Length: 352
Image (tube, rainbow, N blue to C red; front, side, top):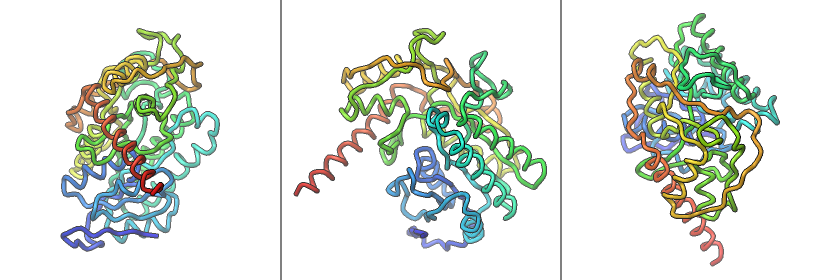
């Protein structure tokens, strides 16, 4: 089933070029769609609705409901909309889940991506932006970590993403096809204007989990290991605002369309915060002293991962605009409050 929402301009569906955004109703993908629309790009979203939220779709943006591995549907969408670029966000992203079910992750993240890349090459799509991850690095010997560092992922999630990077590199060598792979560090926050955010109730991201505890949606927050070789014994991560990350994708698109050679780039701010530090910031912003429990380490979690972002700044001209951890948490908390208020309103209506 396809859903098309025509904007006020009444633009023809067949006009182009369009950007195809896979997973465009998910957390990062939906923020990318907002940024594309704000800059006047033509966008079509492909999403299977497994985790995406239809309300995240801006008016006027067509939605194709389907799977990235449905080659006939993807090919038809590319042809119908005159797509010249793909931004690929559709994926499974939970590290512990990938350890428990690796074959599912290799299927969803690698096999399906391979099908999408094949269709892109076959239909003449020359520009491809891939949502990769810092998990490809594994246990980092030196922080901040650069793109030249060894890639020794500890989890099937990281391996599934690295394998897709390899496929893109090989496809670019063999075909008239260029790509940018953006290795995300820890994505957090929400649209500064409060339009969208991280909506999934079962998210595993630390800031989301801590805010749910602050708002009474969870009984507590677990710290998975406090004996790491870090400043306070808890894992350290580089947190990047989701809107800054979406803008890095815009830079990547402009770079490819202007003839850039492509490449792989870290997306982070170059500074790390520990789990304990993040929990303290959430408590400060929310004003709630929620319960925190110590739990065993999780498999696949490296001690510390911080980005060296000099390459993305130099090559793509990206500049962080929202690099403030309290601001990131404030934007995320405002969105979480909206979600809670929406659930309460819906519950009240059902009781009438």
